[in-house]
Every structure is written in structure tokens, then in C-alpha cells.
Image (cartoon, rainbow over all chains, first blue to last red):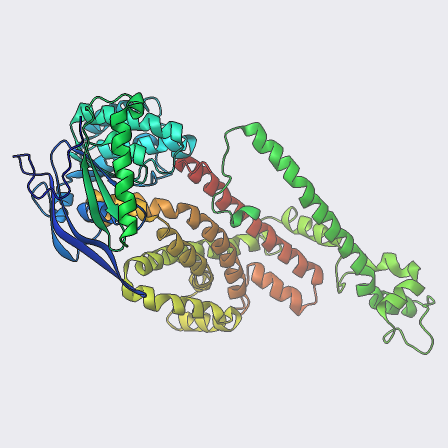
Length: 273
Length: 328
């Protein structure tokens, strides 16, 4: 098995329209110290059902790219569509669930209340809210914690609750910004496993930002390596790993080879600054 | 009131026994401070009152020892006390002492609360209830006004830039100078009685509420607000589901400061109006007739009232925040 390479996926193999399509996307922040090129000429397609990881050193624009997709930042040049429409239209259509670096749970709401928050805002009936809360809590293995307050849960459980909250309104796209960055290795492994199972079960399209090479390789069907100043894509690696991935797949030669390629890509991005 | 600054921290761990235990432990230092204050107070009474006791004794032909070449008037207080220890008991029993002893104030408090019927002009409870009415009405005005101003400041750019400096400036004007003018102006348009006092109380109590609520309404984190944006929530939902609940731990400390300030405002408002009733009127008449014991007991009544009001707000704070799940 040799890793396929697709450094510039301008002609995607998939015949279906991509879920996310970015063309020459640039975003420049004007700061007191002059312009900062957070993103420069980013071109990328993400197909339906893909699990795409974005990896790179801080300042490479991986979080910014995700925030552009979520309509939390506005690009300064280029174009981007989500489900074929602009990010703003996609946001208004509630096309995606967003998981942030921190759980961001509202401390005055129970876990169930936090998960109900998007459902209340979207005007979903109470009966439907209750059944959805029960369903997503089970998905993230938090059943029984509905009435607990966030402070009564560990950091890993809080992050799982925030994932349940993003799943509750059943958007087809999940945007995840370093959701496990603050957790320890063991908890992270467990959540990675759960996330893969969840992805297999739901068939969602997932864009996942991380700075951990093993995490990116373990989770993704595609790994986007980015480099800073200006933030850009330096390599796109198609994973040859099967979709079914036990944790010990990380000890196989294929896994180690991809991890090596990601590391090379990160290093190359650093050198040509 | 150490929990005024804690913004709801430490509210309600579950075990009730722990709560009682901590209260008992917390009582120790409080009692020690009270004992210290009483000791200093009792020690200060003889030198403060010795001159009057000495002149009274001299008039009754009792020998009073004064330092050589000095009269009772010109002698130092401590010198008189040390030379005439026999006069010390008399310093604790005067009718109009410069400094009444704690037990005199306590006896006056007791006789003016437990003694006369509460409708009587002699009853301190009667006066306290008049002041309390103005305090509560003013507090409601002030808290609601402060809340509305804070919402305006947080949501409106123009108000954000313009209101706060004026709110701060309003608090730098001495209320003692402003209160008579407010009373006179309101009187001239036919507003009398409770309302002018409540307006002055509100004037003092809105400010802490504005400051606390502006900070509270702005307290949600970027993640908490971005989250609502991704749900395409409207501004109304943002206020009720995020900003207002997030501001609750900031609201109550402001209300505690606000209700105490409201009481001060109500008392000050009673001074220039020549009010017939109220703790302020009691202070004023006490000072007209040199009734120091009456002044001190009115002061203590005000302090006790303030402590009760702040305590009630604190109890509502504990119950509300616990109910809202602000566990720690």
C-alpha cells in the first residue's frame, strides 16, 4: 500500500459536488504591526463523508480556515462555498455543528440544558428536544449525566458534552477546532476512538483542526498540512488506512509512514519561511 | 461581608453540616473584633466625659485634683482621669455624654424599640420603618434604572461612549449638597413625602448596579457568544439565554452595595426636609438637643437595618445562584 499524493486537489476524483469548496481563499488581518496573512490562496475541496484534518504550527491559519467556513471570519479574497452556498447562508440554514477548543458550556445550564440550547434557539418542540438530548448523550456515552452541571464533570466529559451539543441538531457537517487539545493522552485516545465510531455511524463530513500528528493520522481520510506566514496549504495527504481503525493501527508500518510524511511536510513548511 | 467581592464564589457546597460548621468557625473572628471594639470604646469613655463629671463634682463641693496652675477646663482629659479615679464611674452614667457608653446605647435602643408602641413617635421601629419605605422604593427605582442603563451601554455604541462618564460624575457630587435641591425642586412641582426621599436613595443606588451589570453582561466568553452565532440566534435570544444569566453572579454583589447606598440616601434625604419621622430626622433632632445617646442609637439602628437588608439580598443571592447551578 503506497500513500496516494494529491498536493493540489483542483480536480477532485469524486463526481459529486464537494461539501466544502475553497478557491484561492485569502484572509488578511490588519493589525497595528501591519497586515497579517492568516490565509493565502487556499484551494481545497472536501467531499461528503470525508474526515479531513488540518495540521500545522500555530499561526498557519488552520483555525482561521475553519472559522471562515463557519462564517465567524470573513475572507478578504477568493471564494468559499459550504453545501454549495456561502458560509453565511450555510450558517443561517444551520448546516454545521461547531466544536470549540474549550467546551464553552453555559455553567447555569445542566448538561441536558446545554444540549437543548441550540434546539431551543431553532424552535424544536419540547418532546423532540428530550428525545434528541437522550440520543446524543448516549452517542457520547454520557447517559445519566443529563441533570448534572458542567462543573460536576471532568474536562473530557465536558468536551464530550460539547460534541453532543454540536450533534443535537443533526447538521451534516461537523467543524472541530482542536477539541481535544487540552486533554491528556489517555482521554484523548478514548475520545478519538469514540469520534471515529460516531463518524462511521453518522456518515457526517468532519473538518478537524489539530496539532497532534498521531491524532491527525489516526482520524483522517485526508490530512491537510499547513504552514505559517502566510498561512497556506503545503501538502495534502490521502490516507490509505481502512475506515475501520482499532487504536493499535498506530503501530503498523502504514501508519508510521504517513505520520512520517506529515512530519516531513511540517518541517518543509518551516524551512521555506 | 467577605462574599461581596466573591461574585457568587463558594456558594452552596451540598453538605449542610459543613455550612453550619463553617459559620461557627467564621463567628470566632467576628466576636473577637466586636470584643476589641467594645474594649476600646469603654476605655475611651472616661477621658471623653471626664471634664463634665469633674465640673459637676466641683459644683457639689467634691475635691477635684487638677495639675498645678490649671483649671478643670484647661486640664488634659487623661490628667483628670488619672488624678481623679473616683470620678470614672460618673463618666459612664451621664444623660448627655460626649461619648455614650455601649451599655447606654444598648439600653436606649432597647427602650425605644421594645418600650413604646410601634406607631408612637418615640419608637425607633416607627422611624426605621419610615426610612425603610423610602430605602426600598429608591432601591427598586435605582436597581431597575441601573439595569436599563447597563443594557443600553452594552447594546448601544453611543450610550457606551456617553453614559458612563456622566454616571461617574453623578457620584462625585456630594449628595449632602444635592439632596436639598432635589427635595425643593420636587416640592415645587407638587411631589412630596416618600418620593423625593426615594429619588435621592435611587440616585445613590443605581451606580453600583450599572457598573456591575455592564461587567456582567459583557462577561460571556468569545466561545460562548460564537456558539450562538453558529446557531444563527437573534439578539433577543443572545440576551435572555446568554448575557443575562451570565450577569447574575455580578448582579448580586452590586445589589448589596446598592441597597446599603440606598439606605444612606434615604437617611440623608430626611436631614434637609425637616422630616417628622425617619432615622435621619431622629439623628437631626438628637443633634439639635444634644441627645448624644439618641444619635448613637439611631446610628446603630441604621447599621442594623443595613446589615439586615444586605443579609436578605445575600440570602436571595445564595438561593438564586444555587438554583441556577453556579456550583463554584
